[in-house]
Length: 581
Image 1: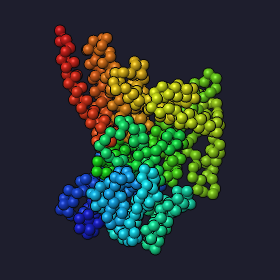
Image 2 (image 1 turned 180 degrees about the vertical axis):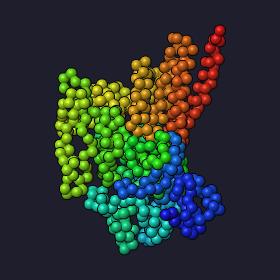
Image 3 (image 1 turned 90 degrees about the horizontal axis):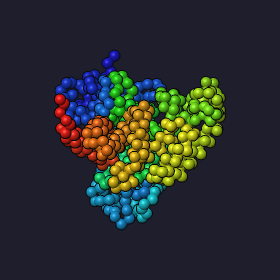
Image 4 (image 1 turned 30 degrees about the horizontal axis):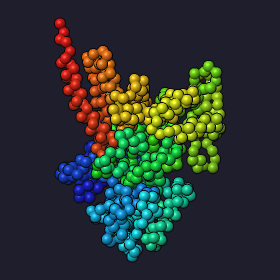
Protein backbone atom coordinates (compact mmCIF):
# COMPACT_ATOMS: atom_id res chain seq x y z
CA UNK A 1 0.00 0.00 0.00
CA UNK A 2 1.36 3.44 -1.01
CA UNK A 3 1.86 5.73 1.97
CA UNK A 4 0.07 9.05 1.65
CA UNK A 5 1.76 12.26 2.72
CA UNK A 6 1.27 16.00 2.53
CA UNK A 7 2.35 18.04 -0.50
CA UNK A 8 5.34 20.22 0.37
CA UNK A 9 3.86 23.10 -1.67
CA UNK A 10 0.10 23.17 -1.02
CA UNK A 11 -0.29 20.72 1.93
CA UNK A 12 -2.93 18.68 0.09
CA UNK A 13 -2.87 14.84 0.26
CA UNK A 14 -0.13 13.41 -1.96
CA UNK A 15 1.41 10.03 -2.77
CA UNK A 16 4.12 11.11 -5.24
CA UNK A 17 7.60 11.31 -3.63
CA UNK A 18 10.91 12.90 -4.50
CA UNK A 19 12.87 10.11 -6.22
CA UNK A 20 16.13 11.31 -4.66
CA UNK A 21 15.37 11.29 -0.95
CA UNK A 22 11.96 9.56 -0.80
CA UNK A 23 11.03 11.85 2.09
CA UNK A 24 9.08 14.74 0.49
CA UNK A 25 5.61 14.35 -1.07
CA UNK A 26 4.02 16.21 -3.99
CA UNK A 27 0.47 16.23 -5.34
CA UNK A 28 1.65 16.93 -8.89
CA UNK A 29 4.69 17.16 -11.14
CA UNK A 30 4.23 20.93 -11.38
CA UNK A 31 4.46 21.38 -7.61
CA UNK A 32 7.58 19.21 -7.54
CA UNK A 33 9.20 21.51 -10.10
CA UNK A 34 8.16 24.60 -8.13
CA UNK A 35 9.60 23.20 -4.92
CA UNK A 36 12.89 21.98 -6.45
CA UNK A 37 14.60 25.38 -6.20
CA UNK A 38 14.38 25.08 -2.44
CA UNK A 39 14.40 21.30 -2.07
CA UNK A 40 17.57 20.70 -4.11
CA UNK A 41 19.60 22.01 -1.18
CA UNK A 42 17.85 19.60 1.20
CA UNK A 43 17.41 16.55 -1.04
CA UNK A 44 19.51 13.68 0.19
CA UNK A 45 20.44 10.30 -1.32
CA UNK A 46 18.95 8.68 1.78
CA UNK A 47 15.51 7.91 3.15
CA UNK A 48 14.17 7.67 6.69
CA UNK A 49 13.43 4.16 7.93
CA UNK A 50 12.36 2.76 11.28
CA UNK A 51 13.80 -0.21 13.14
CA UNK A 52 12.56 -1.61 16.48
CA UNK A 53 16.10 -1.61 17.88
CA UNK A 54 17.62 1.67 16.66
CA UNK A 55 14.42 3.64 15.93
CA UNK A 56 14.54 6.07 13.02
CA UNK A 57 17.63 5.98 10.83
CA UNK A 58 18.79 7.00 7.36
CA UNK A 59 19.38 4.43 4.62
CA UNK A 60 21.15 5.20 1.35
CA UNK A 61 18.86 5.17 -1.69
CA UNK A 62 21.74 4.84 -4.17
CA UNK A 63 25.47 4.16 -4.24
CA UNK A 64 27.30 7.07 -2.62
CA UNK A 65 30.94 7.81 -3.37
CA UNK A 66 33.48 8.81 -0.72
CA UNK A 67 33.55 12.59 -0.51
CA UNK A 68 29.95 13.07 -1.69
CA UNK A 69 27.79 15.43 0.35
CA UNK A 70 24.77 13.48 1.60
CA UNK A 71 22.91 16.38 3.18
CA UNK A 72 23.29 20.00 4.10
CA UNK A 73 20.99 21.32 6.80
CA UNK A 74 20.19 24.60 8.52
CA UNK A 75 19.79 24.38 12.33
CA UNK A 76 16.36 24.40 13.95
CA UNK A 77 17.70 26.14 17.05
CA UNK A 78 21.07 27.59 18.05
CA UNK A 79 22.24 28.81 21.43
CA UNK A 80 25.22 29.15 23.75
CA UNK A 81 26.78 26.14 25.42
CA UNK A 82 25.29 25.27 28.78
CA UNK A 83 28.48 26.01 30.71
CA UNK A 84 29.98 29.14 29.23
CA UNK A 85 31.34 32.57 30.11
CA UNK A 86 29.21 35.47 28.89
CA UNK A 87 29.02 35.32 25.10
CA UNK A 88 27.27 37.39 22.47
CA UNK A 89 23.78 35.92 22.09
CA UNK A 90 23.82 36.84 18.42
CA UNK A 91 27.12 35.37 17.15
CA UNK A 92 28.33 33.53 20.31
CA UNK A 93 31.75 35.17 20.46
CA UNK A 94 33.29 35.60 23.91
CA UNK A 95 32.52 38.96 25.46
CA UNK A 96 35.08 41.14 27.21
CA UNK A 97 34.31 43.59 29.99
CA UNK A 98 34.02 47.13 28.70
CA UNK A 99 33.57 45.96 25.11
CA UNK A 100 29.88 45.14 25.05
CA UNK A 101 26.66 46.66 23.74
CA UNK A 102 23.49 45.93 25.71
CA UNK A 103 20.14 45.19 24.12
CA UNK A 104 17.98 48.27 24.79
CA UNK A 105 14.92 46.11 25.44
CA UNK A 106 16.27 43.47 27.83
CA UNK A 107 19.82 44.38 28.90
CA UNK A 108 21.59 41.19 27.71
CA UNK A 109 25.14 42.09 26.52
CA UNK A 110 26.28 41.68 22.89
CA UNK A 111 29.40 42.30 20.86
CA UNK A 112 27.66 44.81 18.57
CA UNK A 113 24.43 46.65 17.89
CA UNK A 114 23.86 44.46 14.83
CA UNK A 115 23.83 41.28 16.95
CA UNK A 116 21.16 42.69 19.29
CA UNK A 117 18.76 42.67 16.33
CA UNK A 118 19.25 39.03 15.35
CA UNK A 119 16.19 36.77 15.41
CA UNK A 120 17.81 34.08 17.55
CA UNK A 121 17.83 36.54 20.49
CA UNK A 122 14.02 36.98 20.41
CA UNK A 123 13.07 34.31 23.03
CA UNK A 124 15.20 35.47 25.96
CA UNK A 125 14.52 39.09 25.04
CA UNK A 126 10.77 38.40 25.12
CA UNK A 127 10.81 36.61 28.48
CA UNK A 128 13.16 39.17 30.04
CA UNK A 129 10.78 41.98 29.07
CA UNK A 130 7.85 39.95 30.44
CA UNK A 131 9.86 39.58 33.65
CA UNK A 132 9.78 43.37 34.02
CA UNK A 133 13.46 43.88 34.86
CA UNK A 134 16.49 44.05 32.57
CA UNK A 135 19.39 41.64 32.90
CA UNK A 136 22.70 42.95 34.23
CA UNK A 137 25.89 40.94 33.57
CA UNK A 138 28.91 42.21 35.52
CA UNK A 139 31.44 39.34 35.43
CA UNK A 140 33.19 38.14 32.29
CA UNK A 141 35.76 35.52 31.39
CA UNK A 142 34.33 32.79 33.64
CA UNK A 143 31.24 30.54 33.49
CA UNK A 144 28.09 32.52 34.25
CA UNK A 145 24.94 30.81 35.63
CA UNK A 146 22.54 33.07 33.71
CA UNK A 147 23.59 31.44 30.43
CA UNK A 148 22.82 27.83 31.42
CA UNK A 149 19.14 28.13 30.50
CA UNK A 150 19.31 30.24 27.31
CA UNK A 151 19.25 27.45 24.71
CA UNK A 152 16.56 25.54 26.61
CA UNK A 153 14.52 28.75 26.84
CA UNK A 154 14.83 29.20 23.08
CA UNK A 155 13.37 25.73 22.59
CA UNK A 156 10.49 26.36 25.02
CA UNK A 157 9.63 29.65 23.32
CA UNK A 158 8.61 27.77 20.16
CA UNK A 159 5.69 26.08 21.94
CA UNK A 160 3.64 29.26 21.86
CA UNK A 161 5.21 31.03 18.89
CA UNK A 162 6.11 28.47 16.21
CA UNK A 163 3.92 25.37 16.23
CA UNK A 164 5.73 23.59 13.37
CA UNK A 165 9.18 24.13 14.86
CA UNK A 166 7.94 22.99 18.29
CA UNK A 167 6.61 19.79 16.71
CA UNK A 168 9.98 19.12 15.07
CA UNK A 169 11.75 19.64 18.40
CA UNK A 170 9.35 17.36 20.25
CA UNK A 171 9.98 14.62 17.67
CA UNK A 172 13.65 14.47 18.69
CA UNK A 173 14.79 11.84 21.19
CA UNK A 174 15.17 13.08 24.78
CA UNK A 175 15.67 9.88 26.84
CA UNK A 176 13.68 11.60 29.59
CA UNK A 177 13.09 8.41 31.59
CA UNK A 178 16.71 7.29 31.29
CA UNK A 179 17.98 10.70 32.38
CA UNK A 180 15.65 11.01 35.36
CA UNK A 181 17.52 10.77 38.66
CA UNK A 182 21.01 11.01 37.14
CA UNK A 183 23.48 13.66 38.32
CA UNK A 184 23.02 15.51 35.04
CA UNK A 185 19.22 15.46 35.38
CA UNK A 186 19.39 16.76 38.97
CA UNK A 187 21.78 19.51 37.95
CA UNK A 188 19.58 20.53 35.02
CA UNK A 189 16.51 20.67 37.24
CA UNK A 190 18.27 23.00 39.66
CA UNK A 191 20.33 25.17 37.31
CA UNK A 192 17.94 25.28 34.34
CA UNK A 193 14.36 24.48 35.36
CA UNK A 194 14.38 26.30 38.71
CA UNK A 195 16.26 29.24 37.16
CA UNK A 196 13.64 29.56 34.42
CA UNK A 197 10.84 29.43 37.00
CA UNK A 198 12.40 31.90 39.45
CA UNK A 199 14.50 34.29 37.36
CA UNK A 200 12.08 34.60 34.44
CA UNK A 201 8.99 34.06 36.64
CA UNK A 202 7.72 31.27 34.39
CA UNK A 203 6.78 28.71 37.06
CA UNK A 204 3.18 28.66 35.86
CA UNK A 205 4.08 28.73 32.18
CA UNK A 206 6.35 25.72 31.62
CA UNK A 207 6.11 22.43 33.47
CA UNK A 208 9.02 20.40 34.78
CA UNK A 209 8.41 17.75 32.11
CA UNK A 210 8.53 20.32 29.29
CA UNK A 211 11.73 21.92 30.54
CA UNK A 212 13.51 18.66 31.32
CA UNK A 213 12.51 17.19 27.97
CA UNK A 214 14.10 20.16 26.21
CA UNK A 215 17.24 19.63 28.32
CA UNK A 216 17.28 16.00 27.17
CA UNK A 217 16.71 16.92 23.53
CA UNK A 218 19.75 19.20 23.67
CA UNK A 219 21.89 16.63 25.47
CA UNK A 220 21.08 13.84 23.02
CA UNK A 221 20.87 15.80 19.76
CA UNK A 222 22.93 18.96 20.29
CA UNK A 223 25.94 19.52 18.04
CA UNK A 224 28.83 21.77 18.98
CA UNK A 225 29.43 24.25 16.17
CA UNK A 226 32.87 25.89 16.13
CA UNK A 227 33.08 29.67 16.26
CA UNK A 228 34.33 30.38 12.75
CA UNK A 229 36.66 33.35 12.96
CA UNK A 230 39.22 34.28 10.31
CA UNK A 231 42.22 34.63 12.61
CA UNK A 232 44.75 31.82 13.00
CA UNK A 233 43.97 29.53 15.91
CA UNK A 234 46.68 26.88 15.51
CA UNK A 235 47.33 24.72 12.47
CA UNK A 236 46.85 21.38 14.17
CA UNK A 237 44.50 21.71 17.13
CA UNK A 238 43.87 18.06 18.01
CA UNK A 239 40.91 19.03 20.12
CA UNK A 240 39.20 20.77 17.20
CA UNK A 241 39.01 17.39 15.50
CA UNK A 242 37.21 15.65 18.36
CA UNK A 243 33.55 15.29 17.48
CA UNK A 244 31.12 15.44 20.39
CA UNK A 245 27.38 15.56 20.10
CA UNK A 246 26.42 16.14 23.70
CA UNK A 247 24.94 19.25 25.27
CA UNK A 248 26.16 18.06 28.65
CA UNK A 249 29.78 18.17 27.53
CA UNK A 250 29.82 21.44 25.65
CA UNK A 251 32.98 23.51 26.09
CA UNK A 252 34.95 20.40 26.97
CA UNK A 253 37.01 17.76 25.22
CA UNK A 254 38.53 14.64 26.68
CA UNK A 255 41.89 12.92 26.71
CA UNK A 256 42.15 9.20 25.94
CA UNK A 257 41.84 8.35 29.63
CA UNK A 258 38.70 10.46 30.08
CA UNK A 259 40.30 13.58 31.58
CA UNK A 260 38.66 16.85 30.67
CA UNK A 261 40.53 19.50 28.69
CA UNK A 262 39.42 23.13 28.52
CA UNK A 263 38.15 24.40 25.22
CA UNK A 264 37.27 27.73 23.68
CA UNK A 265 33.47 28.20 23.67
CA UNK A 266 31.44 26.82 20.81
CA UNK A 267 27.73 27.18 20.35
CA UNK A 268 25.10 24.46 20.25
CA UNK A 269 22.77 23.67 17.35
CA UNK A 270 19.89 21.26 16.82
CA UNK A 271 19.27 19.70 13.42
CA UNK A 272 16.25 17.71 12.31
CA UNK A 273 17.50 15.29 9.65
CA UNK A 274 20.94 14.83 11.15
CA UNK A 275 19.39 13.70 14.43
CA UNK A 276 18.30 10.53 12.61
CA UNK A 277 21.85 9.56 11.64
CA UNK A 278 22.86 6.64 13.85
CA UNK A 279 26.14 6.00 15.62
CA UNK A 280 28.89 3.64 14.56
CA UNK A 281 32.42 3.53 16.00
CA UNK A 282 33.67 2.92 12.47
CA UNK A 283 31.25 5.28 10.77
CA UNK A 284 30.88 5.80 7.03
CA UNK A 285 30.18 9.55 7.26
CA UNK A 286 31.52 12.65 8.96
CA UNK A 287 30.05 16.03 9.73
CA UNK A 288 31.42 19.48 9.10
CA UNK A 289 30.04 23.01 9.14
CA UNK A 290 29.77 25.81 6.62
CA UNK A 291 30.82 29.38 7.31
CA UNK A 292 27.12 30.16 7.91
CA UNK A 293 26.74 27.44 10.56
CA UNK A 294 24.87 24.92 8.39
CA UNK A 295 25.89 21.30 8.92
CA UNK A 296 27.23 19.10 6.14
CA UNK A 297 27.07 15.31 6.24
CA UNK A 298 29.74 13.89 3.95
CA UNK A 299 30.53 10.29 2.99
CA UNK A 300 33.90 9.21 4.37
CA UNK A 301 33.91 5.99 2.35
CA UNK A 302 31.95 4.42 -0.50
CA UNK A 303 28.42 3.59 0.70
CA UNK A 304 26.42 0.96 -1.23
CA UNK A 305 22.68 1.29 -1.80
CA UNK A 306 20.63 0.15 1.20
CA UNK A 307 23.36 0.87 3.78
CA UNK A 308 22.78 2.60 7.10
CA UNK A 309 24.18 6.15 7.20
CA UNK A 310 26.31 6.61 10.33
CA UNK A 311 28.60 9.00 12.17
CA UNK A 312 30.72 8.47 15.26
CA UNK A 313 29.15 10.22 18.25
CA UNK A 314 32.32 9.97 20.31
CA UNK A 315 36.06 10.18 19.58
CA UNK A 316 37.01 7.25 17.30
CA UNK A 317 40.57 7.43 18.61
CA UNK A 318 39.51 6.33 22.09
CA UNK A 319 39.74 2.68 23.07
CA UNK A 320 36.62 0.48 23.05
CA UNK A 321 36.00 0.68 26.80
CA UNK A 322 36.18 4.50 26.87
CA UNK A 323 33.96 4.85 23.79
CA UNK A 324 31.31 2.47 25.11
CA UNK A 325 31.21 4.10 28.56
CA UNK A 326 30.91 7.58 27.06
CA UNK A 327 28.09 6.47 24.77
CA UNK A 328 26.27 4.82 27.69
CA UNK A 329 26.67 7.90 29.91
CA UNK A 330 25.69 10.45 27.28
CA UNK A 331 23.34 8.66 24.85
CA UNK A 332 22.04 5.80 27.02
CA UNK A 333 22.91 2.89 24.76
CA UNK A 334 25.59 0.23 24.82
CA UNK A 335 27.37 0.09 21.49
CA UNK A 336 27.78 -3.33 19.91
CA UNK A 337 28.94 -2.25 16.45
CA UNK A 338 31.41 -4.40 14.49
CA UNK A 339 34.37 -2.51 15.91
CA UNK A 340 33.23 -2.83 19.53
CA UNK A 341 32.39 -6.50 18.96
CA UNK A 342 35.90 -7.22 17.68
CA UNK A 343 38.43 -7.04 20.55
CA UNK A 344 41.27 -6.70 18.02
CA UNK A 345 39.46 -3.70 16.45
CA UNK A 346 39.88 -4.97 12.88
CA UNK A 347 43.26 -6.50 13.61
CA UNK A 348 44.86 -3.27 14.84
CA UNK A 349 45.22 -4.45 18.47
CA UNK A 350 44.22 -0.90 19.38
CA UNK A 351 43.66 -1.84 23.03
CA UNK A 352 46.32 -4.55 23.19
CA UNK A 353 48.59 -4.83 26.25
CA UNK A 354 51.95 -6.58 25.98
CA UNK A 355 52.23 -10.01 27.57
CA UNK A 356 54.86 -9.98 30.32
CA UNK A 357 55.52 -13.72 30.31
CA UNK A 358 59.20 -14.38 29.63
CA UNK A 359 60.15 -14.61 25.95
CA UNK A 360 56.52 -14.17 24.85
CA UNK A 361 55.86 -11.67 22.06
CA UNK A 362 52.07 -11.82 22.27
CA UNK A 363 49.48 -9.28 23.43
CA UNK A 364 46.67 -9.45 25.95
CA UNK A 365 43.02 -8.70 25.18
CA UNK A 366 39.76 -9.69 26.93
CA UNK A 367 37.32 -12.15 25.37
CA UNK A 368 34.93 -9.25 24.78
CA UNK A 369 34.42 -5.55 25.45
CA UNK A 370 30.64 -5.98 25.35
CA UNK A 371 30.27 -5.99 29.13
CA UNK A 372 26.98 -4.52 30.44
CA UNK A 373 27.36 -0.90 31.52
CA UNK A 374 23.91 0.45 32.35
CA UNK A 375 22.62 -2.54 34.39
CA UNK A 376 19.01 -1.35 34.09
CA UNK A 377 17.41 -4.77 34.60
CA UNK A 378 17.08 -6.33 38.03
CA UNK A 379 17.93 -9.79 36.71
CA UNK A 380 21.32 -10.04 34.98
CA UNK A 381 21.51 -11.63 31.54
CA UNK A 382 22.86 -15.19 31.95
CA UNK A 383 24.92 -14.71 28.78
CA UNK A 384 26.96 -11.96 30.45
CA UNK A 385 27.33 -13.60 33.84
CA UNK A 386 30.92 -13.44 35.03
CA UNK A 387 32.06 -10.85 32.49
CA UNK A 388 32.51 -8.25 35.21
CA UNK A 389 35.40 -10.39 36.49
CA UNK A 390 36.96 -10.79 33.07
CA UNK A 391 40.50 -11.78 32.25
CA UNK A 392 42.79 -10.59 29.50
CA UNK A 393 44.35 -13.46 27.53
CA UNK A 394 47.55 -13.54 25.48
CA UNK A 395 47.04 -14.26 21.78
CA UNK A 396 50.36 -16.12 21.71
CA UNK A 397 50.97 -18.12 24.89
CA UNK A 398 47.42 -18.16 26.28
CA UNK A 399 48.45 -16.70 29.64
CA UNK A 400 45.71 -14.78 31.53
CA UNK A 401 45.87 -11.58 33.58
CA UNK A 402 42.98 -10.20 35.64
CA UNK A 403 41.15 -7.12 34.44
CA UNK A 404 42.00 -5.34 37.72
CA UNK A 405 45.74 -5.59 36.99
CA UNK A 406 45.27 -4.35 33.42
CA UNK A 407 43.14 -1.41 34.55
CA UNK A 408 45.74 -0.43 37.15
CA UNK A 409 48.45 -0.50 34.48
CA UNK A 410 46.37 1.67 32.15
CA UNK A 411 45.58 4.13 34.94
CA UNK A 412 49.29 4.43 35.76
CA UNK A 413 50.15 5.07 32.12
CA UNK A 414 47.26 7.54 31.88
CA UNK A 415 48.63 9.50 34.83
CA UNK A 416 52.09 9.49 33.23
CA UNK A 417 50.55 10.89 30.05
CA UNK A 418 48.62 13.57 31.96
CA UNK A 419 51.79 15.02 33.54
CA UNK A 420 53.94 14.71 30.43
CA UNK A 421 55.28 18.13 29.30
CA UNK A 422 53.12 19.46 26.51
CA UNK A 423 54.59 20.46 23.14
CA UNK A 424 57.84 18.60 23.92
CA UNK A 425 58.91 16.14 21.20
CA UNK A 426 61.61 14.66 23.43
CA UNK A 427 59.02 13.88 26.13
CA UNK A 428 56.80 12.23 23.52
CA UNK A 429 59.66 10.04 22.31
CA UNK A 430 60.51 9.06 25.89
CA UNK A 431 56.88 8.12 26.54
CA UNK A 432 56.70 5.99 23.39
CA UNK A 433 59.99 4.29 24.21
CA UNK A 434 58.97 3.56 27.80
CA UNK A 435 55.43 2.37 27.06
CA UNK A 436 56.49 0.16 24.15
CA UNK A 437 57.42 -2.37 26.84
CA UNK A 438 53.80 -2.46 28.05
CA UNK A 439 51.53 -1.62 25.13
CA UNK A 440 50.98 -2.65 21.52
CA UNK A 441 52.61 -0.14 19.09
CA UNK A 442 49.10 0.80 17.88
CA UNK A 443 47.54 1.07 21.36
CA UNK A 444 45.38 4.16 21.75
CA UNK A 445 47.83 5.73 24.22
CA UNK A 446 50.73 5.13 21.85
CA UNK A 447 48.70 6.47 18.94
CA UNK A 448 47.66 9.58 20.87
CA UNK A 449 51.28 10.51 21.67
CA UNK A 450 52.55 9.45 18.23
CA UNK A 451 49.96 11.73 16.64
CA UNK A 452 51.08 14.68 18.76
CA UNK A 453 54.72 13.97 17.95
CA UNK A 454 54.06 13.64 14.21
CA UNK A 455 52.37 17.04 14.20
CA UNK A 456 55.00 18.70 16.40
CA UNK A 457 58.08 17.76 14.37
CA UNK A 458 58.90 20.77 12.21
CA UNK A 459 56.67 23.18 14.17
CA UNK A 460 59.25 24.30 16.75
CA UNK A 461 61.41 26.41 14.43
CA UNK A 462 60.74 29.18 11.92
CA UNK A 463 62.68 27.16 9.35
CA UNK A 464 60.18 24.32 9.71
CA UNK A 465 61.22 20.92 8.42
CA UNK A 466 64.44 22.35 7.00
CA UNK A 467 65.77 22.60 10.58
CA UNK A 468 64.77 19.04 11.56
CA UNK A 469 67.40 16.33 11.95
CA UNK A 470 67.47 13.37 9.55
CA UNK A 471 66.26 11.02 12.30
CA UNK A 472 63.33 13.25 13.22
CA UNK A 473 62.36 13.76 9.57
CA UNK A 474 62.32 9.99 9.04
CA UNK A 475 60.34 9.54 12.26
CA UNK A 476 57.74 12.11 11.16
CA UNK A 477 57.35 10.34 7.83
CA UNK A 478 56.94 6.94 9.47
CA UNK A 479 54.45 8.18 12.07
CA UNK A 480 52.29 10.00 9.51
CA UNK A 481 52.13 6.91 7.30
CA UNK A 482 51.37 4.61 10.22
CA UNK A 483 48.60 6.76 11.69
CA UNK A 484 46.90 7.50 8.35
CA UNK A 485 46.85 3.76 7.60
CA UNK A 486 45.46 3.10 11.08
CA UNK A 487 42.74 5.71 10.60
CA UNK A 488 41.76 4.23 7.26
CA UNK A 489 41.16 0.91 9.03
CA UNK A 490 39.58 2.11 12.28
CA UNK A 491 37.78 5.29 11.30
CA UNK A 492 37.55 5.76 7.52
CA UNK A 493 35.25 8.75 7.94
CA UNK A 494 37.77 10.67 10.07
CA UNK A 495 38.78 12.67 7.00
CA UNK A 496 39.80 15.88 8.75
CA UNK A 497 42.54 14.25 10.78
CA UNK A 498 43.64 11.98 7.95
CA UNK A 499 43.72 14.88 5.49
CA UNK A 500 45.73 17.02 7.91
CA UNK A 501 48.25 14.22 8.51
CA UNK A 502 48.61 13.61 4.79
CA UNK A 503 49.42 17.30 4.36
CA UNK A 504 52.21 16.87 6.94
CA UNK A 505 53.37 13.70 5.19
CA UNK A 506 53.59 15.38 1.80
CA UNK A 507 55.79 18.09 3.31
CA UNK A 508 58.07 15.48 4.93
CA UNK A 509 58.43 13.52 1.68
CA UNK A 510 59.19 16.71 -0.28
CA UNK A 511 61.81 17.76 2.28
CA UNK A 512 63.41 14.32 2.09
CA UNK A 513 63.61 14.70 -1.69
CA UNK A 514 65.18 18.14 -1.37
CA UNK A 515 67.90 16.76 0.90
CA UNK A 516 68.54 13.77 -1.34
CA UNK A 517 68.96 16.06 -4.33
CA UNK A 518 71.81 17.90 -2.58
CA UNK A 519 73.93 14.74 -2.60
CA UNK A 520 72.53 12.69 -5.48
CA UNK A 521 71.60 15.45 -7.91
CA UNK A 522 68.36 17.32 -8.71
CA UNK A 523 66.87 14.50 -10.79
CA UNK A 524 66.53 12.33 -7.68
CA UNK A 525 64.04 14.87 -6.42
CA UNK A 526 61.54 14.17 -9.21
CA UNK A 527 60.43 10.86 -7.72
CA UNK A 528 59.98 12.37 -4.26
CA UNK A 529 58.09 15.39 -5.58
CA UNK A 530 55.80 13.16 -7.64
CA UNK A 531 55.05 11.02 -4.58
CA UNK A 532 54.58 14.14 -2.45
CA UNK A 533 52.11 15.57 -4.98
CA UNK A 534 50.07 12.36 -4.97
CA UNK A 535 49.83 12.50 -1.16
CA UNK A 536 48.94 16.20 -1.26
CA UNK A 537 46.19 15.58 -3.82
CA UNK A 538 44.61 13.01 -1.51
CA UNK A 539 44.87 15.46 1.41
CA UNK A 540 43.10 18.18 -0.58
CA UNK A 541 40.32 15.76 -1.60
CA UNK A 542 39.67 14.82 2.02
CA UNK A 543 39.57 18.45 3.21
CA UNK A 544 37.72 20.09 0.33
CA UNK A 545 34.46 20.62 2.26
CA UNK A 546 36.09 22.28 5.29
CA UNK A 547 35.24 25.99 5.83
CA UNK A 548 38.18 28.37 5.33
CA UNK A 549 37.91 29.68 8.91
CA UNK A 550 38.88 26.31 10.43
CA UNK A 551 42.45 24.95 10.55
CA UNK A 552 41.55 22.14 8.16
CA UNK A 553 40.04 24.64 5.73
CA UNK A 554 43.24 26.67 5.78
CA UNK A 555 45.25 23.51 5.16
CA UNK A 556 43.05 22.79 2.13
CA UNK A 557 43.62 26.31 0.80
CA UNK A 558 47.39 25.90 1.24
CA UNK A 559 47.25 22.47 -0.39
CA UNK A 560 45.67 23.99 -3.51
CA UNK A 561 48.50 26.52 -3.71
CA UNK A 562 51.12 23.84 -3.14
CA UNK A 563 49.65 21.64 -5.87
CA UNK A 564 50.07 24.40 -8.45
CA UNK A 565 53.67 24.99 -7.33
CA UNK A 566 54.46 21.27 -7.39
CA UNK A 567 53.02 20.86 -10.89
CA UNK A 568 55.34 23.61 -12.08
CA UNK A 569 58.30 22.01 -10.30
CA UNK A 570 57.53 18.56 -11.77
CA UNK A 571 57.27 20.13 -15.22
CA UNK A 572 60.64 21.83 -14.84
CA UNK A 573 62.35 18.71 -13.45
CA UNK A 574 60.89 16.54 -16.22
CA UNK A 575 62.01 18.92 -18.96
CA UNK A 576 65.56 18.81 -17.58
CA UNK A 577 65.78 15.02 -17.92
CA UNK A 578 68.12 13.81 -20.67
CA UNK A 579 66.32 12.76 -23.85
CA UNK A 580 66.16 8.99 -24.48
CA UNK A 581 68.44 7.75 -27.25
